[in-house]
Image (cartoon, rainbow, N blue to C red):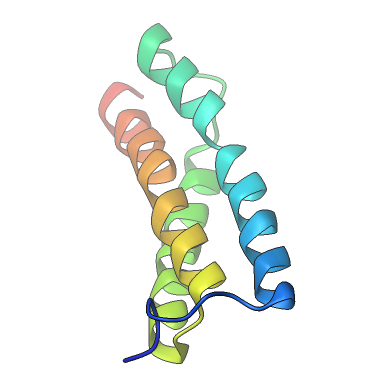
Amino acid sequence: MAGFWSTMPDPIELIGLIASFLTTAAFFPQAIRTIYRRDTRGLSLVTYLLMTVGVATWFVYGLMIGNRPVTIANGVTLIPIALILFMKLRIG
């Protein structure tokens, strides 16, 4: 993991970084809407529970293999997904 942040991404890794940015960004509108409206009735608890655990697992996996796109995408995605899950558990 010594070279994890020290090298520039190659073109293939750059595609992975772009893809990870787009899929990560997809969760922020739902998180923002949920925060402002304080309404989680239309959200599935099971879906967000599975997604949070899955994304956390992918994050750990990315760290273990030293893969920047996987680590960054899942580390950032974990924030809105975990926030939505927390609100679903708290608000209902």
